[in-house]
Amino acid sequence: MEEQYKTLLKKTKIPILPLDQKWHRLFAVNDKNDAVKDLEKQLDELLKRQGELNTQSKDLKKLKSTLMENIRINMEGASENAKHSSKRKLEEDKRLIGEINEKLEAYGEELLDLPRQIDKVNRELMYESVQSCYDILQSNTEVIEEISRWITQVRIDLKKNIIKKQNCEINSKEIYSYMHDVLGAEIIEVFDKEHEDIKLAIPEEKKEKQEETGG
Image (cartoon, rainbow, N blue to C red):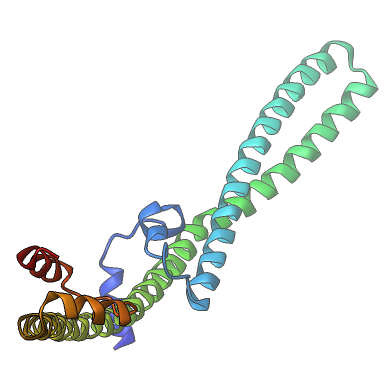
């Protein structure tokens, strides 16, 4: 199955992932796993090497151009003056150009192979990133389902408690009203003072009874 996925990825155009901000956003909440980190490091090193070779090749070509110009000037000077120092300088410049050509050839071969290496590692990184993302999706799904169950239970408990609260309020109201009707406001006031630590849930009802009896 892994090879099937990688074969499919070979047919897909993929950006260089470490240079893609959207790819980095995939791991904004969850850290990259070790496989992703290792491949990202390999790819960074390959990209760094490619940049270094391009820069060095450019510098060597400039130096070669300068040396070629020096040779031209020295050859003209040698034909006119045939000075020994000019000849030595000419030979030294030719030697340096030879070394530069060897380096440019080696760099060129490496630069030709680097895109293949970069593409290979980049696709490996894409594969591991997708696998990691599915692991994150699975983890997120488990958390979402757990919280959803908790929310459902909280809603059930909330409804039960609301009903329980309402029943207690109604019951307290009926009890207080009955005592007030049977015993009267004056006696209830005495009991209220004795049980003043009880916070009645129906102060409006108590107030109404007091107003009816002129208490």
